[in-house]
Length: 47
Image (cartoon, rainbow, N blue to C red; front, side, top):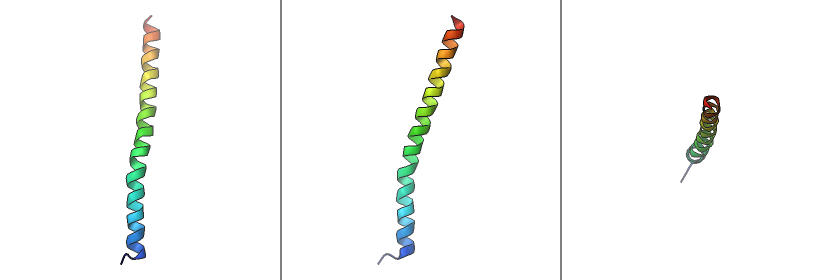
């Protein structure tokens, strides 16, 4: 029998395992856009 505390911990762990990759993808996507913008600025300045 799963107690309420064990159920809550399990639910929290599952939520964390789902949330971390999702937030990581958003961060990597934003970083990629920033780096792309910086590269375009460098190319524009060297012309």
